[in-house]
Amino acid sequence: MDGLRAAFLDRDGTLNVKPPPGRYVTTPDGLALLPGAAAAVARLNQAGWVTVLVTNQRGVARGLMTEAALRAVHRRLLALLAAEGARLDALYSCVHQKESCGCRKPLPGLFLKAVADNPAIDLSRSVVIGDEETDVLAGKAAGTRAVRLAPPGTPSTADHLATNLPEAVNWLLTAGTARSPSYPGVRGDDVRLGEERNLPAGHPNVSGEPQDLCSADRLMDSS
Image (cartoon, rainbow, N blue to C red; front, side):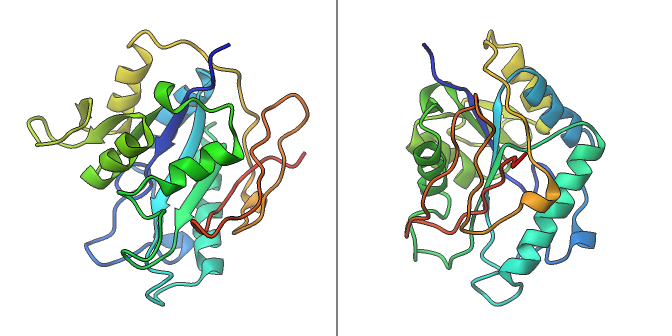
């Protein structure tokens, strides 16, 4: 039996409006979804793809925000997505300084941790979607396909260029991909750093012990 397809989604510039260089989304009110982003995630949900957020958030290591603030921002993200019928199945964040860990993109640690937590995910059948070449490189290093959100002609090692997430998802879902078993989604009060909750019986287990490899938000349904 084929493994699950996962869509690894970058956050800033992919799902929500990207802050200026050197700035971070440090409060829930500072997070605004990009047009069509929630609908695109909902399409992935409906097609049975596992949706996994993988995001670098070095602002924590720089002391510009706390882990609690990051959790609050992600609760806001979940709420905005849910309001439009979309959900995330898991979320992983690197909160470290550059070159101090194995999880900061372009390294593949967040992807590998997701698979360690959920071995049912098949990286060779999965994809990363993000607006930076570091997203592409991280996905490639992990063994996924890659879609970069960038203008046509942008130099990239990605398998495909798209101008935004809706366009990327449209390409992905019309490229002859099959459905995967559906996931139940998560709620805003299920955001944890370094903790985990199991999916209901009948769904692949996405829990696991925290590793030194990375600090991870793992979002799972606890119903």
